[in-house]
Length: 157
Image (cartoon, rainbow, N blue to C red; front, side, top):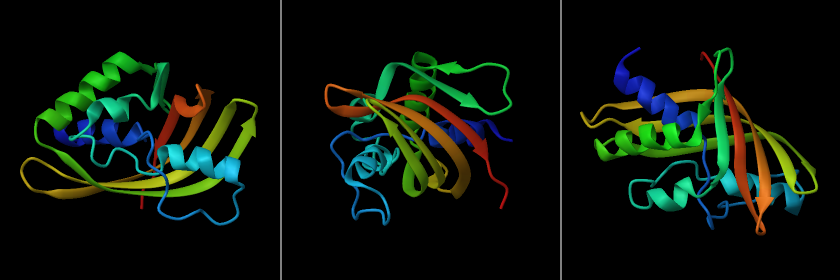
């Protein structure tokens, strides 16, 4: 795997939240409370080059990322640096398709299971996609859902 693709995958794997951006349409079969959790991650990292801070704010301060099977998790600070470097190099996420599987909510904690496809354009102009399954734990902080932990496995299509 090229270094470029590995960085892109780290970006996509982070899954993440754009505060204040509601879903374009409600996802069938989910309650309004479940839909609010889905909406917190619906846009993924599309557009982070124009407002990285707003995207990063969708993660709890103690957020961690785990690629299923890895021996360690990645902490928020390290991950944000990798993503920032990727974006600053001129790479762009141009699509994020989210397929929610289910949402379980208990008070101010939610588990969102999903399948996602992320499409990006490299600085060289090449378009690529990555597809993955994720289980993300979110917490409600100050009335807003933030991602606390993300677990990811890549899917082979």
